[in-house]
Length: 203
Image 1 (cartoon, rainbow, N blue to C red):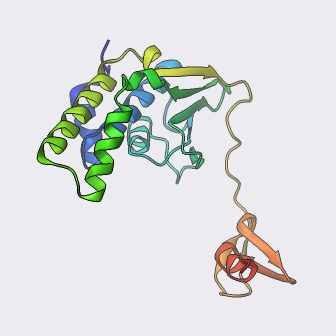
Image 2: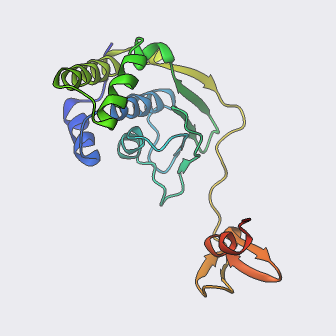
């Protein structure tokens, strides 16, 4: 069972991101899973928590309507190919982790070819092989059944709470206004995070 988004929607997602790649395909399928499991919520109803900053996050933003500006696209820098989705009103939610089996054992060869490409030692044959692997992996991601592509775990705690509008404080070092929750106290001064790092940093 292949991806259920119409081709024009997929093409628009690729145009939004700027190129087509396996990472974007993961995000497309994660968004498809979210809309399926949460019964097509409006973009103001869905909350997406992404544990990576890879290409697929653009697909999730474009296809679900969750954005950082609305406070319903939350990035947690865990370096994992995992995505959680919630329906805010009901608290219904789940976490989807890319199933390692979805890569069909291509990781080791891809990693070696990418290393060669990075250090300039890749041959023309290596580059062709890498392109073939990427194309094949992307096609596999778009064709796999969602329940084989992701390991899905229900989430019982409900959606993260909506963002609050907080007071802005003036940093005593640089003079720039900073959201109260992002300030630090140091030696009696209120500092923004960059200024705090400058004075607190251990040598």
